[in-house]
Image (cartoon, rainbow, N blue to C red; front, side, top):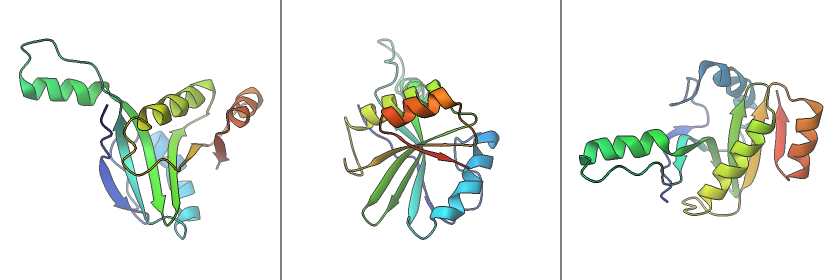
Length: 145
């Protein structure tokens, strides 16, 4: 189950990272300046897990495309001196965001290219009270911007 880091950006990168929706980018753009002194780079659209296996006889290019399209994705990994955050960026975060960060961090553990000492983070613009409590109980850091 390979981890594929995707594109690497300096933390000051002002444009939309690869694979990020315009809605999520609005949240990310509000948050990014608050951590520019703590992190040096970020990775966007990080693929984890094995994805869907291709049928026997599938040409290698199509098999690779299928894997890329069906692997799970970590929206952002922030990296700095002694810091590593795996982030799910989600508009109006709820139980789906929690499930996603728990699943994707578990898959990342199978091939932790940047190390195992990380913080799981949900970055959002809003969260309902029940989801907030569930996120806290799961030990995931919640950041609302």
